[in-house]
Image (cartoon, rainbow, N blue to C red; front, side):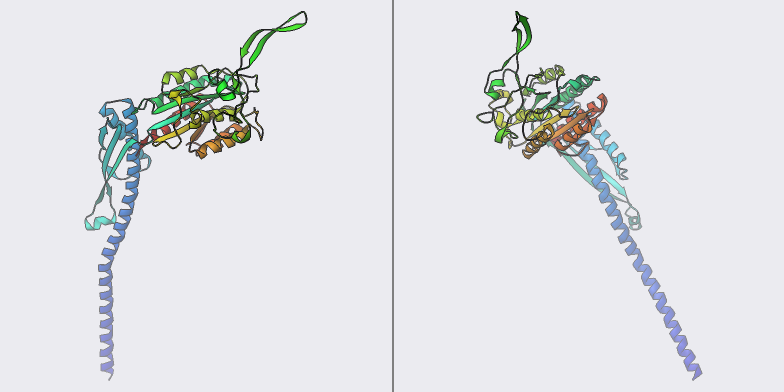
Length: 427
């Protein structure tokens, strides 16, 4: 009996040992494909992330090439612009994929660029099954997206702009931006047009437009009086063509001047800077910038209103034929306002608030018409920065810029010009 029990226990022990061995073997056989599957999942995920970064870099590269195409017809320079941007973008984002050179196709007649790139992403655990890298190819193309632009620059010409070389800095920065915007090749000569709105204590609309917007003749103002036997006589006068705003239901709209919508002109503080309607002639815009004066206070809301009027289709009857703004819903077109100040909005003629409150309402109404607004606060106090940040179509650094010196101002206008140029190029 004892022998039988021992024999039985021995068989149980042997069976238990066999079972443990079988489990270990099964686990080992299962572990390899499991680890391979996990490894491949991780490698595919890493490759997908790298692929997205490569796509972003390639998108930027074709934009860089398209901008180069606006400046040169030399293929090697265009290709180098794309490759340099692509390499810098990969390095900046620490992409570990190994990529060859970009394949570039330059379509000069269409003003577009096509590109492709093939990259290999090193694997980790996938190497267990001999998969040492994963290959992917990405494509990108630019073409004209927004083909037509109506752009208005609004410039502060108040007295403070005459301090610390501010106007000189503004003129240099703005002229460079205008040249950059006009540099783009266009299908039609008027695809890109630029207007200039200026303001100080008021807005000088000039003799050509005063009656059309006020329904009155420009008033004569005496600038030199003499006394003769107790009587005052005017020996020198000037014509004032400055305006201040309007009241009523059209106060914050872009309705054309007319009955109950005429612009007022109760001001004698008239800065000599006048308006420049939309034009595709670079020289006209540059000349307007080079002759900007500095005097008076800062009625910023009026500058914003007139920036709107210059690109509003509702004002087509006011401006010359070549300067008629496009319709808001015209296909492949965008309207852009670039607003600028160096100070507080401290002058007001309109009821219902102050210059800041009026400016808010004008900006809200402009954005409701899908007008893209960029802003530049140049050596401005916080209140000036705040109103421009409110008016901008997006965040600081993208649509709202703040500059404390001439170089920062130049950088701000350059960034805006580049952003607008990119707007014309669809990826």
